[in-house]
Image 1 (cartoon, rainbow, N blue to C red):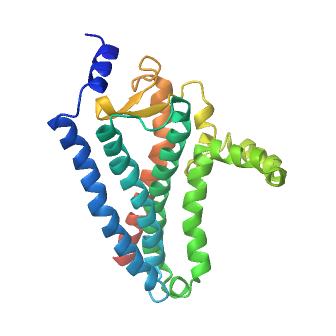
Image 2 (cartoon, rainbow, N blue to C red):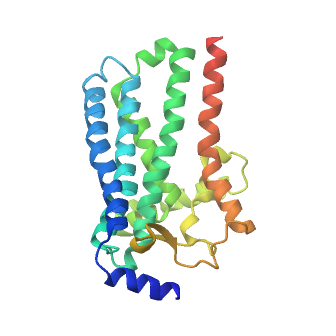
Length: 252
């Protein structure tokens, strides 16, 4: 039986115990932890005037809630409803939203690690940091993630002519950092969603997960895919580690 025949058979059949368990577990996971994260975030928001670190944890909790919805409630709903829910032409936009939320969370790891380092290295200036500055730093995580996804940024410019004034500056920044070794800025992956090797993933309810639109084009062992993964994800994992090491050194 071909894959297309198997998928069609699954869609035409009623929900069975495996479908209910798979979709229900994901939905239950989201329904339990989203309110808990929301409660924790609310507590930190109410106390962020006294504890500076709560501001960054509050913003990170918002990103985590988005991930719980994206990878819990949403796929669970697709399985239980036996529907992709969105239209096929919306897949790339959904992919970009998922990437944006994911990279927002990754950047928050670096921000939180930096905040702990700064609290020990520069305790006075850290304690006197204004709420505006703290939340601007938090906002930068979401902005950098949107820039990394990049098409969000171009659509924003195209939809708002006023902001097209910044397009020459944006292109200049790309030109400056194209041959730079400052990989932690990650400005060299701004065109991620426009590269020839980029493949869109989407939630396939029948597979209980995400599938690639082109299995032959997406191969984790190919040089282009491996380079893309290392360039776009490795820095967000390495930078927090450096801050953690620096924090331990300061404590010792």
